[in-house]
Image 1 (cartoon, rainbow, N blue to C red):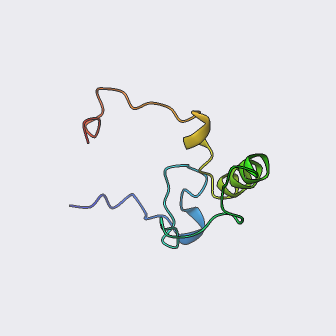
Image 2: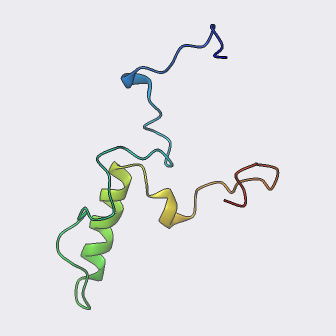
Image 3: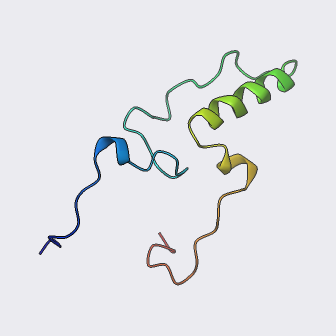
Length: 78
């Protein structure tokens, strides 16, 4: 039974600022930066990758800023 006092979020209220939010258009096959990383362009590639991940609010994954789940969380072992 749904709570009658709770309204679903509208499109503009979706949690897009949360780094765990996955937009329907995001997928692992999408290329985030060009050029491809090689042995001569790490600095340029790294800066481009951090910029691209920042724009998608995903830079927390590589910088380690994301908070850890507590072991009391029912989704912890998942």
